[in-house]
Length: 163
Image 1 (tube, one colour):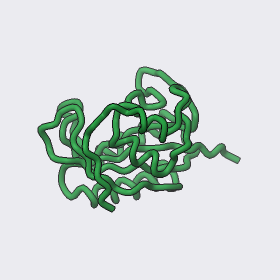
Image 2 (cartoon, one colour):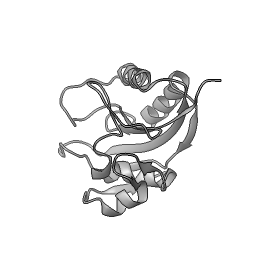
Image 3 (tube, one colour):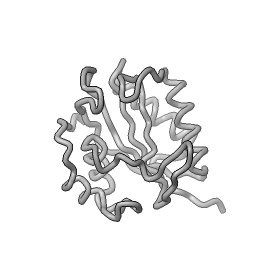
Image 4 (tube, one colour):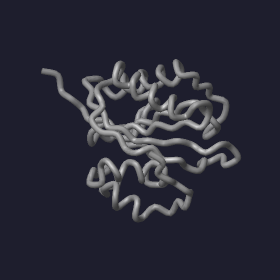
């Protein structure tokens, strides 16, 4: 029997019909990566990095997969492409962004993939929905759970639950 890995993904969109994009992304992830286990509320969040752009909708989902980490990455990049993602500038406006936050408790640093995601602890737009669905999940690198990282986070960006 294949091993089922638990994976946390951050979904974000700030162009087009943001709700519809998140819905499509979740459906495509279930088809190409694995079934949805949990999903956070959707949050409207201030842009991070480049602030002169529309607000984002963000959501964290937990899925189960039989795929290896690099296969998950390849599939989520394909999903971004299918939904119209074009990479013009780092942290710029985008139809969809799917970040691989955790792959179980795996620590990995390869040319294509770093796990856990290296900026989880710096971003309220990630930590708030993550703490909603996995408050006690421990970051294997930082040895702190989602709630502890959120309490210590210095990011003051606005994050508002909208659904």
